[in-house]
Image (cartoon, rainbow, N blue to C red; front, side):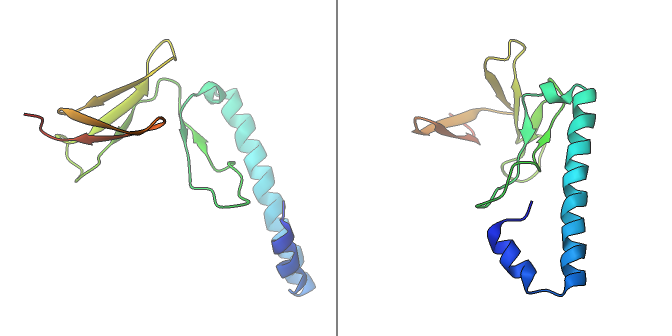
Length: 123
C-alpha cells in the first residue's frame, strides 16, 4: 500500500492529513480489486493485449488495462494519417503477432529482442 519512503513523508503530516491519505490509498486499492473482478466477469481477463503504462521504481502494474480479445491496435508513427499507420494484432492461433502497414514497412533489427518498424517508401 504505502512504501517506506512514503511512510516517512506521511509521518511528518498532521494526523488528519495522514488519515485522509491512507483512506485514499484504501479506496484506490478497493477500486483496483473491483475492476479486476469486473474484468474477469466480462472475459477480458483472457486478453493477451495490455495497454501498459510506464512504471517507475517501486510502482506496480495495476494500472495496466487489458484490451478485449482479438483487439487490433493501430499506431500512427508520424502524423496521424490514414495513409501512414501500423496495425498490430495477435493471430487466431495466439502464437504470433501480425503487423500490417498502410504502405510498405521497413523492419530494422536492433538486437535479439528489439526491432524498429517504420512506414516508408521502399523502392
